[in-house]
Length: 191
Image (cartoon, rainbow, N blue to C red):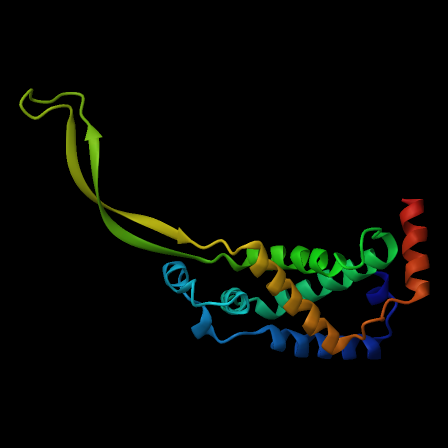
């Protein structure tokens, strides 16, 4: 992004400091990282905002959370520049589009799943078998089973909205300048 490339060292240090502060706003306590079965069991009690907090708690569990949060903030910045330059739809629908786009990335990166080893009884076919026992045999095996939770579109919107709210903490709403728009459009035409 040209905005980041044209910064002085002093401004870049300030932006990194602000990005770290915004990343801390996105962090959730790890105790909110409920397992998929618990989420489904409590789903009628959880609000959309509560489910978004679960996604952020799972993201907070990642070792690279700070880098990931900065990546999502930069993605939100990029989308704001794109919207100012190229978006031609309804202004009322734009926030939902932006929130959904960033939220989809965050949800995909959260990997909300739980793998447990469970004892399972299976029926297997046998090639050679006594007539009295039949072609199938019951066996008991331990195998890993993965339980996943896929948040709804409403949760993705809430997750993305939180990124844009954190972005508002570090940048004003109208931070995209006319010069940035002109440079972006010039680059797009020459590409």
